[in-house]
Image (cartoon, rainbow, N blue to C red):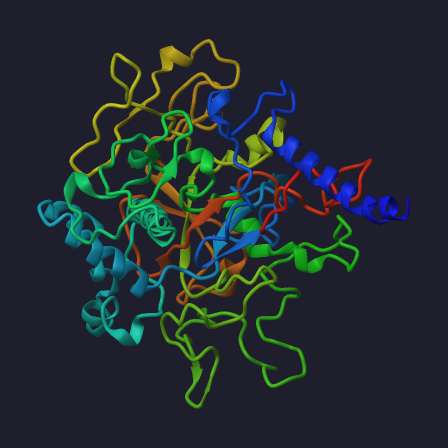
Length: 503
């Protein structure tokens, strides 16, 4: 009897482990076995630990906030009326994309597309943006992009179109590095043309790279490429939406109490608390400027020996005051492109139409993967990319959630809205106008408020506009088994059918 009681804890442990394995290996609703060749080899990923934080990024926990201007509308544009929206969790670059970051993109593009010089030409920033009729800026024209002294300064002269292409390239390089680091693929510096690693082409089985290890396909017994279901590859890098950018810049998390009360009493004017442009805490940093901006006409840096921000033009991407999310230069240094198309009545649309207040965005141009008669993706193009085609309006006319492929002018320029933008006749607003935000080294303090917005054609560039990237947070905002989850009937983290996640 004594032996039985001594071994009882071990028996319970064995039964508990067996129970956990049974729950993990069988379908919860059919009791069919996963990961078993005898049961058809249907796979279930028991090792997924959550989305990993991408390089140079931080997690921005989603939430609700009042989007729009917080001060007087000085230009009287009335294009950013305050309204409450909610933004889902996402990742965002801590810093602006630097000259060094962009040069890597240019060098890699020159290598892999040597037979397509037009690809590199399209990626080159416009360094002539530094020229001015009454200023001597030629040293910046020749040296700002490539001289190592500016390596960690934000890249400028990049159009919205170029920024999106960089984001696409970054997606492929990050995912390629993941496969190489995990041993699923060999490093291939000799890639070129249609043989370049492109994420969507790889997932569609149209990349002929050499798999050194891969994963075993339980249905065929052979080695297979990584699939989306494996949870290894990252989602697309992209420009942040205007709502995401503004939410991240305000960093309202810093206004919460220790109990993380969901209410806050004051709307921030800048990415820091208060209205002062100088650091007021009594320490060695007291009196320093929070951001790199133009204090007044002709004053870009302050007096010699006692500068405002120590920079006449841009500053290092790691300089200046980080906000409560740990993001640098969300005010000043350079303006930043966001994903949205500019329309002045978008804010009013969001106020009037309630079901557009989650992840609000204007600029959808829906695309579908081009497929052959058998439903398979058509052959990738000469640059290694799959082919996408615009959604046909006739194909979606009967849908409830959307009825057109391109909805740039939805309720702001279409027949329902009654608005009509006579581009280049009465206005510069067009289907090429894209929003930029944040203020720059050449802007007054007013434009440093995250609620302000301006626009520029997507194929044009400026010496005061740069960009940073964002990425969606897949799944729960904090992870698979978030201890903060709104889950009742069990202690957080104790559900044996759930797996923990890395943030």
